[in-house]
Amino acid sequence: MQTNTGLTAQNADAVAAELAKLLADEFVLYIKTRNAHWNVTGDNFHANHIFFEEQYKQLDALIDSVAERIRKIGHYAPASMKIYLELTHLTEYSERANDGLGFMKDLLQDHENMIEFIRGNITPFSEKFKDYGTSDFVTGLMETHEEMAWMIRSYFR
Image: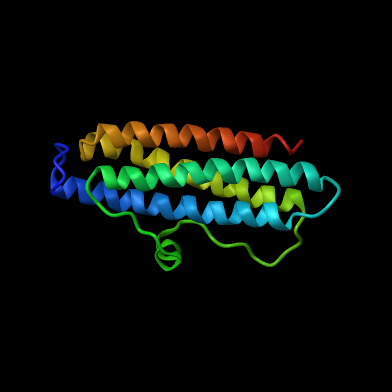
């Protein structure tokens, strides 16, 4: 059955393409946060282990919400690592020590990159593509990433 949300097919295609990039970013960030949870070492191991777990659980919910938003506007959500790695703006970890602050610096940079990407799409989604629902949706995602980044940033003096 065809989706009829009031968006033109061209606008829905454009929005879905940007949401697919966002989904890829969310998934890569999720994997990186899981990696931090599994592999963190050091003096604050326990606190960092729990902190990273809280963060990856939040990201898991965000991943689902982005994929469902793509479905709501009539498209299929990409769902393979190959596609995610082609679409993402983020990079995988380089080889380095597994200390908590090292992981946090990398994850903070990723959250900030995602905030910029999302912020750059809020206005086009509403004004250019007339998709006010997705504009509102990604505004909420941006606010979540701002809060997650703040939590990470608070570990630094």
